[in-house]
Image (cartoon, rainbow, N blue to C red; front, top):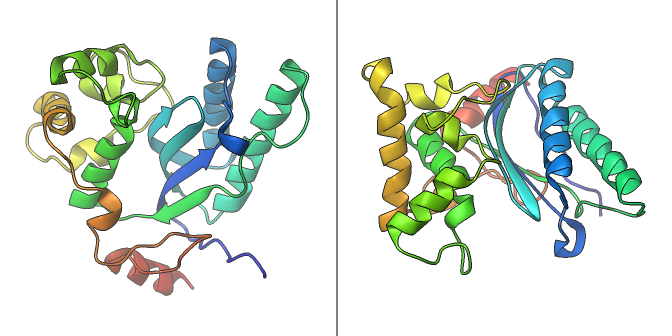
Length: 226
């Protein structure tokens, strides 16, 4: 069976997820983590891509990114191959590092975008193992976790140079000077209460490469571009 085509158009906004092959770690050292982020930063210029959020976990990574050109497949192919080649050479291994095709979800601006950014940024303190502890303990782990765009959003440190925060922070409205604090509080709400899975919060969902659906206004923009 042929693989479903990736849907690509100028200005498309995506949630992207890739996992290690066989649930294996895709980073073994801080040098690996820095190399991946260096390649990600390089790719934003090379492919004219805007990265709004990221989190780099042990066996997977999430990105919230926008393609100014209709080039999602070329961009992600370059990023994943470049990192896999580096990792295999450095650790003297062969074979696939990443599991199958990455998943790509077309998303839209608005409340869903805010919910998705929170979902991404809470990865370091979510799940059976990582989600243990009091909200205060989880907040401290979140603050100490450096392989994410959240510390920059929260004002806990300098934002990563390749991250464009305005799209997400702009959804909060109000005075710009207050947005980092308001965003941090918004994310931290997820530490004390169950947050809705953003993929269940939209009427139509597009899981490109898996199940093809619609995302209200995003679908309208897509069909207009075809």
